[in-house]
Length: 104
Image 1: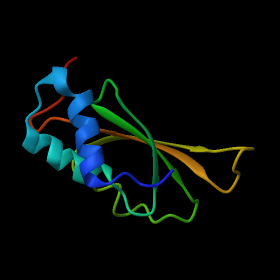
Image 2: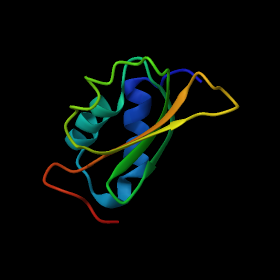
Image 3: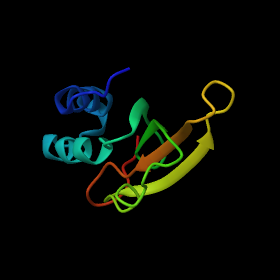
Image 4: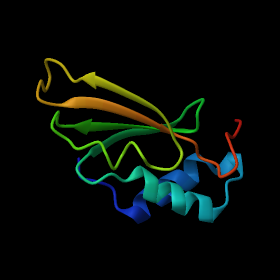
C-alpha cells in the first residue's frame, strides 16, 4: 500500500468526520499531523481520544519528530510478530479538535 497523498487523506478525513462538525481548516491541520515520513499508514479511525492511526514502522525508526507532534495523546507500539518480524505496529492517537476533545 502506498502512502496516501495529502489530498486523499484530507478527503478521507472530511468524510469520516463530517458528523462531528469540524472545520476545513482543522481537517487540513490534522492531515499534516497524521502524515509521517518513513511510516506506512494503515488503518485510520475515530477513537475516544480523537483520531487513531495505525502505522507500520521499522524498529530503527527515529521517533523524536513524531512524539512532539501537536495533539498527540497516546502511543501504542507492538511487535508485528510472525507476519513481519522486522516491523512494528504503531498506533498514534491524536486530538482532532483545536480546543480539546470532541464528542461523537
